[in-house]
Image 1 (cartoon, rainbow, N blue to C red):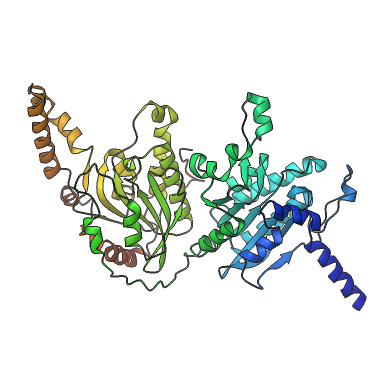
Image 2: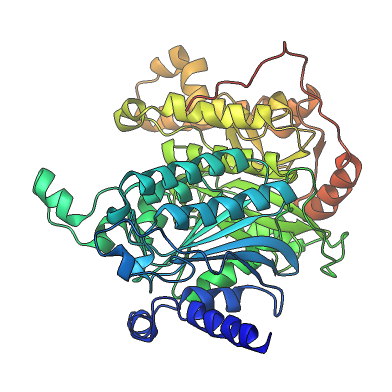
Length: 520
């Protein structure tokens, strides 16, 4: 028995070294941790139970019989992260560049099946050169099996991907099918076709970072939800995210007592929105003052900044926040902002987060670029997402809420459970100036003097604002439940959420169907 135990220890030691000491040194030289170092930092101490440590690939020729390594380039196991159960998958770049072959993929699929069967999140640390060429179609089959599992798990368990090295070709579609993507600056990249193929195909010179680096995907494509400066930073983001997420779609998000008084009023909110409706302010100042202090975790912070999305807590309860950002493009809705809001709302509904929406929106962005780019189709995604959502939906209208954008941003007409408005709210088909131009166009056309016409327009706009574009007109129709003093926003939302937290599905009856058809 002692000899057998010695053999076990020797094999374990070999497996722990992955592709060997030299490969580990090269990984460190790039500023990257190894797969096992990443897992050790991420998981709670002593909680990792490794699966399939001794799996090895088949000897398929092409020199593969000489390149056997225990684990086959990926470490999988069960663990706790931030006190929460999870399945962790970490590709090991030290063995054959973390390339994906038949057994590598089988380990990943097995781990994902375990996560789905036990209702726990999947955390996938990507660091791979792509499909293992030596294994041919078995590698491609492996990717297909993983994609299928990503789709089966979608909306059932949270899926988090961290891109901590290369992720190219077909490999990008597993993270793309997951809920959140975290990228590391300088050491990670994602693209379908690399610089060499781009050069050969269209003659464009581009490097890996300019083509698919972290900042590109965080600010331009919207593929990356979060960006970190190091492996450590990326893993810290995962730990933070895990504190908000439920284990699966049958559970509520975890509660945390933050010690912030539920009835805390903030006098600063009364003076936060400028008197001039065209003057900008930072919506994040509102969000952070209303939520429990220090709990706002913004998602997609660098992309489509005219919209704000993120997680937070309200009297300890985890909530989703969606808002317009007057500081950027006046908070207007465009193609990217529509996609950002719609996808986030659908995630939050799938995993039982109440949705709090802060509204200050002048409309949808006009112009040929938006129309030709499909703003109708993309804007409809917001309407679909809010209408489909059955979780508690609370909305606060701060200032502008014009036209179709007013309807789209969590209005009562799309099933909001509680809608409040500040006294500064302007709710109408369009802004008062534009409305006055149309309603009184003949009267204005008869005034030849420009200064007199401008004075008259301002007077008529003021009349329109006082009679129609104000919160009391909408409240009089029952479209707004309460007009509140800004400082009362937090305690008002806390009370509202207390009452509707146990809400059951309230959508109108529809005939049985497999699923709806969102405007993809």
